[in-house]
Length: 133
Image (cartoon, rainbow, N blue to C red):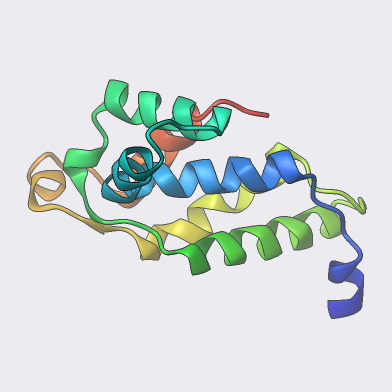
């Protein structure tokens, strides 16, 4: 099974899409990267950062997903594609696994609890706000 998963292809733009999703969960990291570069070269990173501002998601996230979450999301997306009888990943595969991969990796703020916002609510907002490749 591991050999079959290794043969599933994932386009570079889809990997950038995963990184964009993770960057929205880590607003301080996104801001620091922007300040260190002076500009954002990645279209998805810029769009995700703008969407994060627009949705005001950050006030509900105390700690976001780590880079290991991105690795898990990529692997799970490949497995999902394989179960769908494909040897390539689609954005739908990433969306299909996002809740299960990210749900336990987000630490929500007290404000989220006070507003009855769950991790699933946050993840759904992020998926709706980050543009598909």
